[in-house]
Image (tube, rainbow, N blue to C red; front, side, top):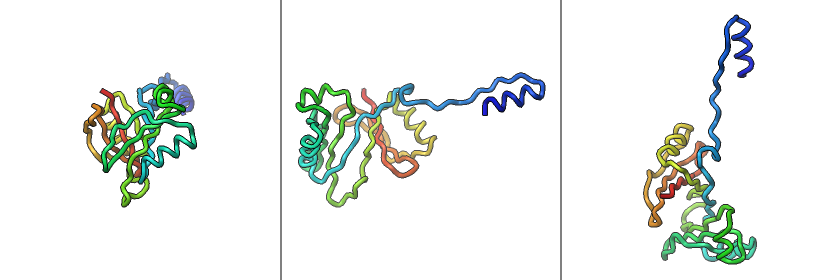
Length: 158
């Protein structure tokens, strides 16, 4: 398209300077996949499954109450190795018995600028579900839905 526009401009006797907007890529914007969330009615049992089936180990529990758990696992046969892993971790989170599968964000993105990320996402067609809040760990987070209705959680480390 750029070449066609330049050719048309030259054909009518002018000069051509064509600027085409290029998309921003994640590695250029600082956005990275923080983790993938897997919902489970029994997070302990599912964490044990991932450990046995894929050689993963628990690295931490950001939430661990009687009603809601988040168990973070990563590649590594021991917790020490899993904590050193550079791979994207999975978070096994409690799914209520009456909650349908997919009722919580599965994709968690870490962003360098929360307001900018929300603005870009909503301009591209996302809808803000829950505004920015802070976790007990000091993370800012917000929830969006993509144009197809999938939940996406944005996290900002502070």
